[in-house]
Length: 547
View 1 (cartoon, rainbow, N blue to C red):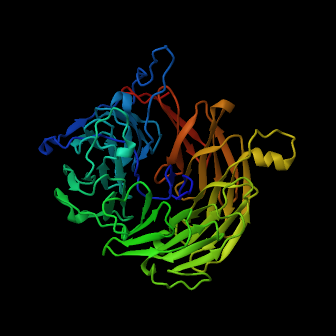
View 2 (view 1 turned 90 degrees about the vertical axis):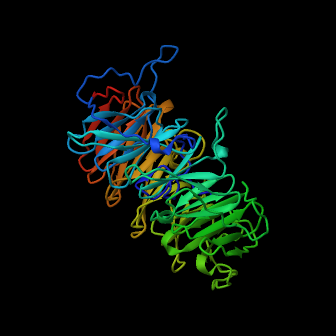
View 3 (view 1 turned 60 degrees about the horizontal axis):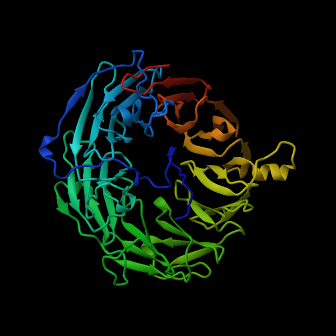
C-alpha cells in the first residue's frame, strides 16, 4: 500500500488499520517461571507535592534535557504516559478539574503504554525488560495495582486487538537494533489483558514472523511468517501449542514468502490478499479453507486497499487510469460485469491526475483516489456500490486524508511546492508554496482551503467527530500551535504553545482534548473545543507536580 500515514480513527498516528502493529516494546523472558507472576499495590499519591523535577535534569554538557515520554494512552478516567527514565507511569485525571497528577512506579524502563478497552487498566512495555506490566489505575482513595508478567525472550513488537483486550508479542528480526539479542523466530506470545493473573500463552508459528493482524472484533489473530499465515482463534488458544501456517501462495514455493510480498488481512481475518513484487496481479487466500485464487490484472498494481465491511478490494492501475473493484468471495470466478473486467475485477475510469494512491472511507462505502504530485489537485470519490465518481478541485495536491466515521467529512492534508510563501506575491504562487489543509463536506459538495504557517502533524477527531484538531509545529520557524476546525461551519480556531506540541487525542465522555508538548519535565495541555478553555499540567516525574 502507498497510502500516507493517516486514518479515520479518533487517534490517528497509524494507517487505516485497527491494529497497533510495529510498536517497539518490552523484551521478555521464556525461561522465566510462569508461576512467579507477582502483584503489588501502589498507593503513593504525589500530586500535591511541589516535586523535584527529577524527570528533566541535564545532559553531560549541562544543558537541560527533555524527558522521554510515550504517546499517551486514554483510559476511562485518565490520560497516562510512560516515563522511561523514572520507571513509572504518570496518570492525569481526565475528569473534573483535570489537575490531579499521580506517579505510578512500575519498574524497568517503560516506553509504550496502551489502554485496555473501556476500563482504567493499561499495559506498559519497555524494550529489553524481560516482562511487561499490567496496571489497574485506582480512582480517588484507591490504590494502583501493578502486575508484571514474563513472556518470550527479546520480543520487540506488539500488536494489540482493537478492543484492547488481547495482545500478541513477537520478535521482528527486521526491527532488531544493533547489539540486541535475537528473539524467537517462530514463536509468539498471546496475552489476555482483561483477565486477572492470566499467564501468557506461547504459540509456535512459521519461521520469521513479519506481521500480526487482529480481526476487528478481536476474535482471531493472523500471524504472517515466511511460511504463510497462522490463524489464532482466540477462544481456542488456552495453553501453549503450535498453529501451523496456511500457505499464502499457489506457485509451489513453500517456506519462502519473503520480503518481496505484501500481505493484507481483512477486518474479519478470514481472507488475506498477497501482492508479490514483479508479479502481475495478486492472490486471494481464504484463511478458513486455505483455498488460493489468483486475480490476473495483466499489470503491476501500485496500490491495494481493503474496504472493510463492504467485503471489496480496491486496486489502483495508473496505466489504465482506473480503480478496480474485486468481491473477495467471488475473486477468480470471472464474475466482473464492468468494461474490461476479468477474473472478477470491475474497472472504473478515474479523472485525470487521480491515479496516485487510494484511501478508503471509514465505513467502506467509498474509496478516494488522488494523484499526490504537486499539480494533481483533483480528489476523486468513488462509490463502492454504484461505482459513481465525483471529483473535487482542492487547488492543491493531496498528501494524506482523514475521514469521519459517518463518511461525510474529510480533512485533506496537502503537499506544497518548494520555497517559502511571501506575503504580497501572486496568489497562485502563495497557495502553491503554502502548507495547507482542506475540509470537505461530501454531502454538500463543498470544500474550504486553510493555509497554515507549517505542515500539520498529529491529527485527531473530537469525541462526537464534529471537529478535527491538528498540530502545526516547526521549531525552525518558531511555530508551536494547534488548530481545530468545525465540520458543520468550517470555522477555524487556534492556540499557541510555548513548547513544541507532539501528540494529541480526545478524552472519553467530554469536549476536552489533550496535546502533549516537548518539555524538560513533560507537559500536557487540555483544550475544550466547545469553549476554547485550556488547562496545562507539567511535571511528569516520580514526584509529579502541577505547574
